[in-house]
Image (cartoon, rainbow, N blue to C red; front, side, top):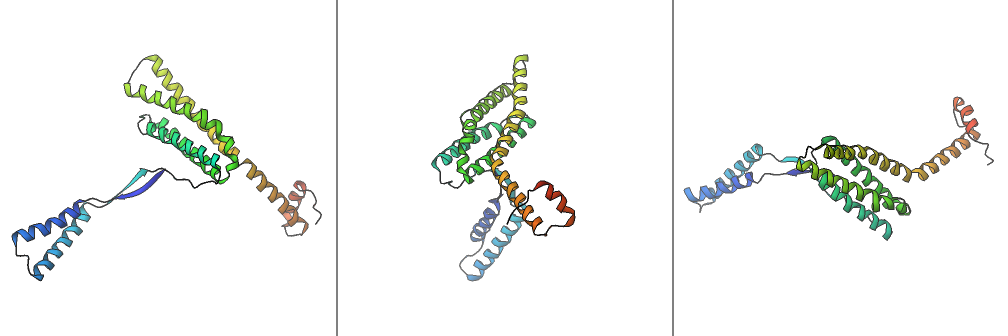
Length: 226
């Protein structure tokens, strides 16, 4: 997960300290006036230095911390998944192919969303077991092999074909994990659809729907006896 941080340069602090040192070496430093002058010069040096060496905003990778789901099994599975993602991210940062790297980044994002859903509904943990025990480990193994071949800059036909196969399979892997994420929401989506259907039926019977919607709703919703 990317997080924006502000990097402050230490140079303005060095300049401020240097003013005190130079002033004490060149001029008397025992009167209140001298101390005030040195303080003013130091503040001015810090201000100018801060303008010249302004703080920089950077995006850094930070480990996302998930709250406990209340289920030991779900928490352990999410922790296992995070460890795999950390290794995958390490390889991704070193892969030179921009398209493949973007696919890996998308996979990381989908996996984090899957983990969040498992934390929210820990009863879904068994659904992702195979992904953690087989799919992600195999993806990590393939990416390690890809990185090693890329780093060695081997131009042999077999090596190039292997790298192309790894690049090609990432599309399939990414779509599979997206489908798994959709599957985690399937039950909830069905419940929402049912609630909407019932609500529309009640509104129709109460005469609270616009006329243009009554016919459409009546075709879809059976009569409710209240």
